[in-house]
Amino acid sequence: MSGIIGSRLNVRGSGLVSKLGTDGQVLTSAGAGKQLAFGDVAGGVSWQAVETGSTMTAVAGNGYPIDTTSNACTITLPASASNGDQIVFTDYARNWGTNAITIDPNGLNYQGDDDSYTVEYTTDGQSVNIVYSGSTKGWIPIEDDTVTDAPVKGNSEGIFGLGAKAGNVKTAVTNLVSSSGVVATDTTGVGTARVEPAACEYGGDKGIFGYGNDGSKVSMTNLVSNAGVVASDVTGVGTARDTLAACSYGEDKGIFGFGHDGSGLTAITNLVSNAGVVGTDVTGVGTARRKLKACSYGGDKGIFGFGNDGGNVSMTNLVSNAGVVATDVTGVGTARQTAAACGYGYDKGIFGFGHDGSGETAVTNLVSNAGVVATDVTGVGTARKQLAATEYGGDKGIFGFGYVGGYVGMTNLVSNAGVVATDVTAVGTARESLGACSFN
Image 1 (cartoon, rainbow, N blue to C red):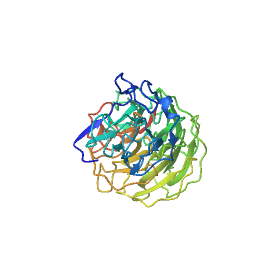
Image 2: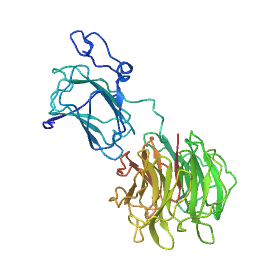
Image 3: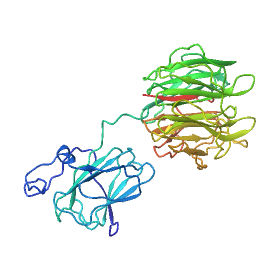
Image 4: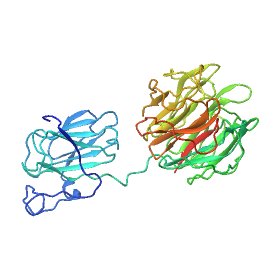
């Protein structure tokens, strides 16, 4: 392009077809007078392999699935074109909202503007179908619709539950999180009040709180419906323990792992079926520890991370989409315990906050969709420990509650790009050592 002198975002998801000509219709190589719809023109397109590069050159007559998971993509259009030439671009991995595509008209006009303008598409799931209409208007999008009926990814709502409140009194109170990240006032607790449980998703749209300490180590669980209703206690399966962690895997199952069983640290795990049934103990893999956290990544896998094995650690253990825990991965980031973790951006995760041995911290570490933990990101919000976190809104997260010189209830939202926001005033009973999970 000759230089960016402005910025234009094209109409997205409007469902409107652009037409050009004296009678308001698209000019094609077959002549004027035919109104084109996507189904009419897409059939003659030759679809190419998925494009993952940061740059590419498009050829008329082709369709391109563009995967911007790892990077944005600049697309250069042909230097010359004939009326009726057509090119289609589609968001292969629904990531244009994070990494956009930019179209370089390469000396030709685009919707009547010369190529000094920025032509950018930034909506997840979008498909852009362009046709060349002549030198005056140049390339015009006859459709630039957003895919609205794509399978839903991620749960839209969340729940914080259980923990200890002022006076170190155990509680079973819960607080729902709306699809916009708003925390609701207290819901009367159901089930045994306890501290240091874990929670995760199962069944694709439901959750489960499990294990913890009600004065002694327990293994009971409480299912959470897809409406956020917590059920009464289910008799425990597996070794009773507290200070463990849990996350989802395989898109519709869950796993509890690690913790303290009363006699010492353990790395045992218990799988949760897609019906919310907890399995018997699976022999532990990796360093036995407690006060760690876990979250999902990659859409169908999980990761346990950080904790205390006698001292604060930062090692992680990946969980496959079959629920198999891998050996230790050398830690990245500040070693700490009593942090929190949740998913964001559909397929990534974040660890945040905790106690690093010298005091509370708000530092965070992002987890890529390949399960790679990044170095420390400077903390935002009140440094604290013994908090919880969950996904909400399908692709965002929220840290909430905790302890810093006293029980607190403030929250911090996490954007779908993994950016943590400043404190939101507390709603609900201030408490620590609680659990959280999402539901839909």
